[in-house]
Length: 224
Image (cartoon, rainbow, N blue to C red; front, side):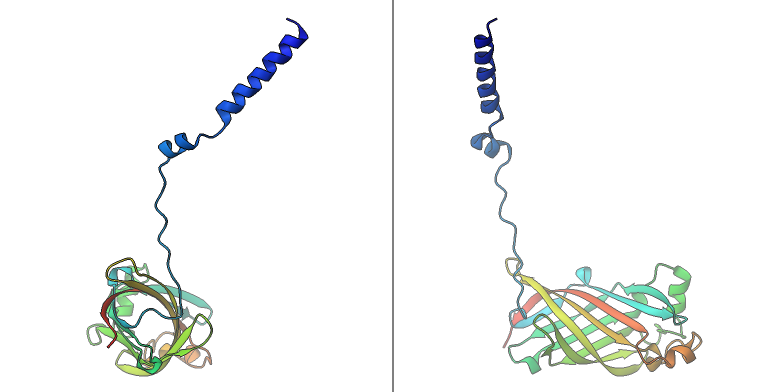
């Protein structure tokens, strides 16, 4: 084979390779049909005015409680219900949350039973804890706060709750919204943990229990 013929063969091979390797628009469309555009979540300062019912299956209340001052025990409550009312008149915004105290879980059966007992939540006498607040104010561009009444173990204290609106799913009927909130308390102020380092924890200036709550809620009715 002459050198010239070899070059011609190489050239033809290169062209065939380029044709085979080039992506085919029609083939790609056939093998990978166009996917529908992903649903976008529109995040704004607050959701549309109205009343929203909390979805217990997609709402989670967590806590972290100091143990012997330096340790930390984490847990959650599995049953959360309530409503959230959003209004353009910020003082008219309302939050009403109820938590089933018997649904506490720290992933330790013995400890959970102890926490349900008289020394802590005393669930037979106080089956629920509640948080009720009216009126909100802006803290930053993306966060708000409210001063609500937290009732635990028969004791009610005003506890600030800071929250952020995470967005809404307007194309879901009814419309669904999501929030994340946080607060902090001292359990000694609610008469809990008397035999559990109460003297040390009661002397702390900072709260010894941190609370986090993630809420999804469905629209129940438009604002009046």
